[in-house]
Length: 287
Image 1 (spheres, one colour):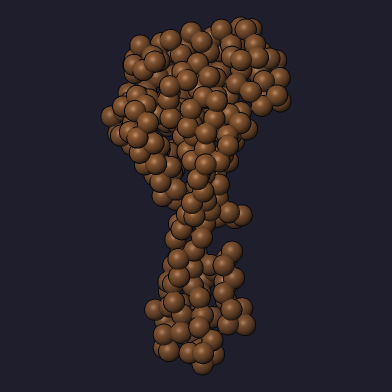
Image 2 (cartoon, rainbow, N blue to C red):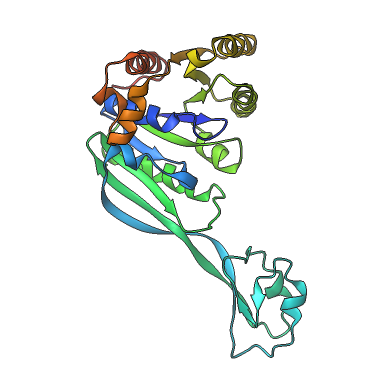
């Protein structure tokens, strides 16, 4: 079993559209959407939910009124102003537990907090493991780890040889949770000043964890000079630019139709994606 994770230095680079196209080309993988802060792979893959599970990502304070003597100590120590009239606002509570430790009557308990849900769904391209956070909930990477673990379980049970993961953007905890232990990372970048800067940070991260990484330049022809600068930077770092996808309005039409690009177009972007997928197959294996 191999795992390919597609990430980017920032959101909006086109990695989800790329993963959706790969799913249509592969047709023998378990799909995982680990971008749980903005999960939208399901918009392309038309999933039918088979299982739904609750996710408890942390703890929140709860005041037991029968034990509270309203001394006000919790109000003094809460730095997040989450307690008002001796009731806890769960949206403001950070779950630090200071109020619970400070309460002389032990009237405050730290209870598990429902942060979201994760799902196992069926799609025309294979099983999809994905998740949805609740309103204003933080993603610490724990939910990402849950999605990845279930994707591996499904792949083992269904004898799939590849896990194809849509990873989160950036270099924070969710990204580290998504790429740790992966066989290959594909970093999607755009030809801009910020794109080069963010690409460098992601490559630093993959190098730190010793994970092989390839680069894909999306919409490279919108700024050919900057694309050449990024390619030069990658050569100097020893990072292979495995694909260059041109700007193509067919991509937007595919997103609007809710289908993978390679199913609705044979334009230049779709052809570049197919060529990229062939290279990735060579590197990682799989059908």
